[in-house]
Image (cartoon, rainbow, N blue to C red; front, side):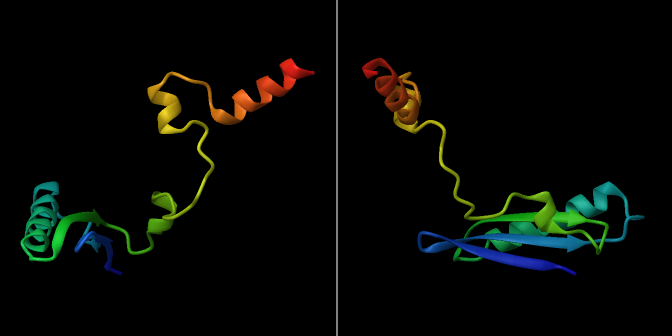
Amino acid sequence: MPQCRAYHAGQNYYVEVDVVMDEELPLKVTHDVGQSLQRKLEGLADVERAFVHVDYDHFHDVHEEHKPLYQKRRPKRTLKDILLFRKPAMQQGLERADSAA
């Protein structure tokens, strides 16, 4: 079953579309259809970017293929730690506690 999802990107949208096509069709045909759909979607005034995924299987679970959205994980290192070549803040706190003991 084809699916379409849209996410806000400022005033515009990022659009994801899953399309199922006959597996006997040549790659050139399926690629051209996907690319044409992407260009048409991106031609809409409020679409910032479109992503078209072409598959040959109706029983395909998109959620198994892609990581879940909005799954919050505690970062091991912050961007500031990476840019300043520092150890993660949590590890620094543990080292201070060990040296104080």
